[in-house]
Length: 604
Ligand code: F6R
Image (spheres, rainbow, N blue to C red):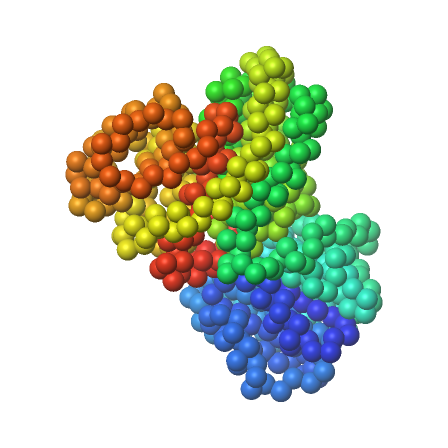
């Protein structure tokens, strides 16, 4: 989604810095970008497409030494991706950048047109800019003007604002869209997330809804809705700048898959020393007899693995729902229900909205989040951080794996507390858990095998993933990973369901990937796979080493170590990620920034 960054203060080359910072926000997803720098005159340059286009356009613009600028990557919502719709927008005395969606912009636009405003873009952002300019005609004080504007806006926004009557300050505000303030020596910044400030400083402040930021080069002032000064804690980014670099890998996605053994080990070590450690470190979840898991995309797929292991081992019914549906439907929960929200970014708009609904009903919430201090982490009653480190590739890999690992720990914790598993059984799993990072590493080293399998897939138009039980949940993630980065159409099916309709799509050469990790279900899966073979499908199998199966046909097999069933999903997911990566690489796709996608989906 859109990314914003803004500077005020001493900079030798503001143009270069803003461009570099925009590049660090590229991973959020965008289709155009723009920059506004005040160097005695307001210079605005905006271009469709990659930031390189913006850089090229900027070469022709003379920009003198400057201390004030805002920049933006736009992910089109209102109006196509073109130069005019790109941000910054400028109307009258106001120049601004915006992340979010204004829901009542049509009404506001009509009112402003009646007042004589003329609009050149299709965006809701230009409407905000005009609205603020209009308010400024009767309100001199910029903080008060921004506050008045919020009374008229419906929707979500993080704004970086420059007023023509005050080039000594940079202003910002947020509602339901992420915004932070970075604090440096001799300059201050605003940004959508910490990756944009980390080159300059590790010190930052989190901004809450409706808080108005007024920055000068050496002062940070923050006001609440009553225009009272707010005192903020200064936080420190815990990760290093190197984590946001490729460090020799061709792509961030590959680097992040290679990070998995380390981050998995670091995160689980805190919990798996022994049963007592697990129980003491995990929140007490003994009172719940029902769990809802709410999330989007891959995080929802991790939730499906969680459902499988929590139901099987902890004996508690779990429903998994997409946040975009859950937020608008009737949900059946009570005081003994725990609602778990899973989100890598902690800023996904639908997940935040669903969380707020549940909190309004005073139902207990637990968040599984990666980004420390993000909205979901702050607003849930309790939070378990997965600590995957910064994830830059749009397609999640290491964060998904750690979400699954955290849900397995939750299952073990509840299973022990409600006596579905005894101490000896839990201890046995924890002991084996310690070996899992090493096994993950061994699978990652089998990149070449994945390359061979990928060759079978990369010229396909359709790929089907089949699984049963937890393997179906994993198939869904394998399928999403493949389609989002390689643009090959793909579907995941519970293997037994295929013949109820979808098998009509199988034809000569269609690739079917079967996942088998459970001895009870493997023969059933094999029969379903053979049904597709009989219709000409090309079969690939991902299976565990223990399965004694009679394959009377030729197929690629990727065989994985057998570990305790509850831990097996963590290993299965590795070849799924690597195969998707290799297919996309062979097809020459933009793997880290797939078309139309955004890392952090901050609009509904
Ligand atoms: C797919 C992917 C997305 C995210 C989804 C939720 O690879 O990354 O499907 O899982 O957008 O994002 P978070 O976890 O940030 O809430």
